[in-house]
Length: 453
Image (tube, rainbow, N blue to C red; front, side):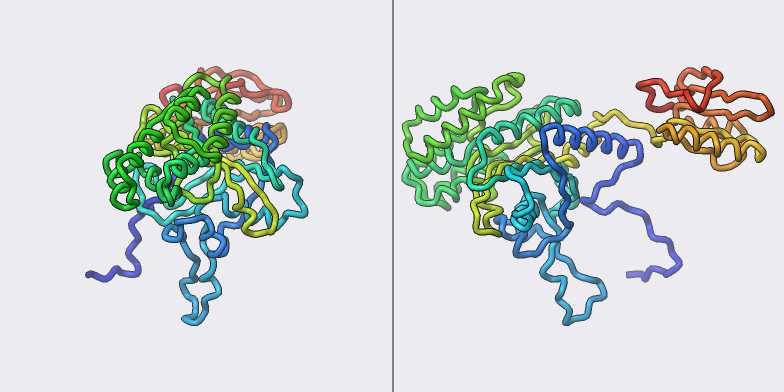
């Protein structure tokens, strides 16, 4: 292998699984984040932020996740220094939230409603819809002893409102209840219902034939049990009438009855949403062991094989693992990066301007530069995003700069005694007199384009 010369420049290349956006896409993403945050707060959720790292024994409480955790290690650490070895980057926001709740238990007001918008890291193979670093937008409600079932219905309602407003295309939120699955499998006489739940959670990836073989060969279910499990997983419904279809399978247990009642409550509470936007889907299992009741998975209708775009569910004792109190909760997470990257790849995003600037103040001469700086300060003082062209230059060059960055207005300060200010709208080429103390950009004007200028 040829050695790389020290003075040879590195070839710029993206790091696989770590997405980044050009400014015009980043501005759209920021708009999404603002909308998500505003909607979360409209429902009474408070923002928290936890560290990017957690203790490894905290991270591994969630189930089969240890292979995905990035651990911390200093490049120049001494061989005998393992002080960072017990730390890992968080791979979701639910486990850090549970630890946070237990740690601050005496200072929180319950039910505690929190939202968290942060980057998370997972050590998996990058592919379409899967990243090593991505942004999650989580909401959870956690309470002492009992979390009302009302919140199980509120979670998909909030996500439906957000994703509809973001115009991501047609989507559905699939709802199930782990008590139905576990109670049904127990009623069939299956000794390890959780193992069956894990197997059924792979239906989308492996298909019905391979899952059936796994149930039969690996879990040793008989043919009748396999058939009943797959029949249950195949049930879909748009309202609570689906409960009668499940009862019609002839399986009985107390846990199953409890799960059916909870599912019916959630579906009835969401009946005012557009028909088909939330459906009961008995194949949704959520493979993580800590889910105990309602579970959710949102999916694109147009891209059914893409994977979930939101997910979550109810858990009884995740936070209770840190404190000797019953702290059940329910939550849902929007996979912002997964949705955003897919729509960007499909050319479905409304591209924003390359700059947030609303006004460029022109400075054609050295003598006019000081006036341009003063004018920009006055406009900024009124909340108008303003930049000064960075040096005296030809007006044609300054106008082209504004067009290329998508700046909708160019401001011309007075160039002589007694002259007035003027502003030019680049979308219409209209130039008018303006007062920096009262002028305002037109509502809805975002940016200019070279073609429109």
